[in-house]
Image 1 (cartoon, rainbow, N blue to C red):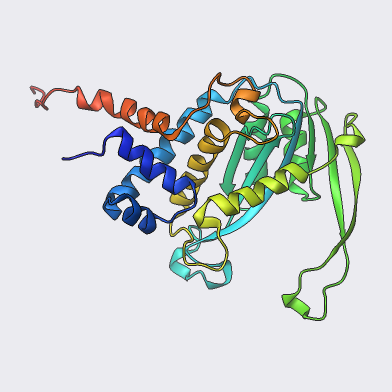
Image 2: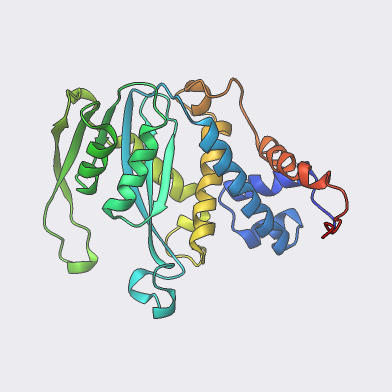
Length: 288
């Protein structure tokens, strides 16, 4: 079976991480749609596995946590009975280091306490030292952070105050009229009680991941593919994309790598994973 070479793979992956849909990428790269889908899935898995191993013993000092909404297959109110549990609202929980802009952990799931516990527990295992954490007022964070860190954390919530909805009624978003910091654990520095960086990261996700674009039919049809698209995005964000204020990638700023990656490196990771399979000899039936 014919396979794309690393150069073509890098081209396809570059188009995907720049926000193009699978079909648009297929047309632009002159590659079959099925090939693009297969490469996307392989790249997402490789990126998730690599970052799970690489993003450890991190020197983060200030983390900001938040969740961003999207949906899979259909919006929650339109999910058919047969699809319940695998479709509807999909929340992506994201943590960002305020200093290096590295995203050390993320998780796709619902907005429940169970998902919050899994997410925060994963964060706690990746850190080298005590950190200051800021979240919004979402209550599941309270139990999750206490369970993962205990008293070994400086934790504060940024509580936003909203005014009444406008004249458009339920179609109008309430206006944020103020906010205040609330100490929860330890001694958080009030000057750094903020969620600005992680909220800006939410915008980056919506601009870069086609599946997060509102009012289109580019949304994910399967939860697994939705999660893979996030893994591919953060591989590019952490390792390949030079942050304007840092002038290096977030992974370089955090000491995870010493160079700027590009998508040919991701293609090489895929090839390295395939190599052991290619070297196997012909299958021989084991003697009884």
